[in-house]
Image (spheres, one colour):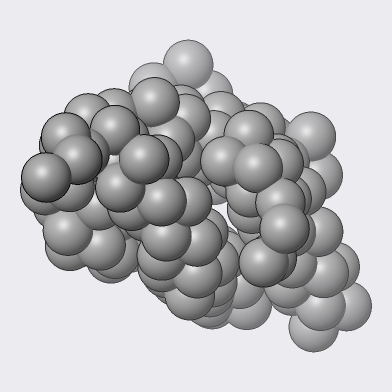
Amino acid sequence: MARLSRAAVVALGGVTAVAVNLVVYSVGRAAGGTFQFTSSSGPAEVDAVTIAGFTAVPLLVGLAAVALLAPFAAWVVRAALVVGPVLAVGTVALMTLPTDLDTASKAALALCHLALIPITIAAVVAIGRRAQAIRATRAIPT
């Protein structure tokens, strides 16, 4: 990722996360997961489109915010390195564990959330490096 722009890092992070989570989802299906659960409006099912959307949208929003703010404030990168993984783990506890999914589906969805941690960290670190270079060029010469 040495030569990619911040926007390209965001896009690559999103594409990578969706691809990884679709593989995890497929393995969960192959292991017998039905991905069916009971919602407030009745029976529901998590499908591949849902996996892709629930992976891409929050990750891309978060990475885009970091990419836009990091050149102006270095603390944004440090905060994202904590907040991103905490949200990934927290969403397992809040969204996946309380459901009535079968074991294979629950495990696969939990892994989908946790797979975002290394992807998020790698993307945020890469964005941080690019932002640091931008901040360095804005420094007042002595």
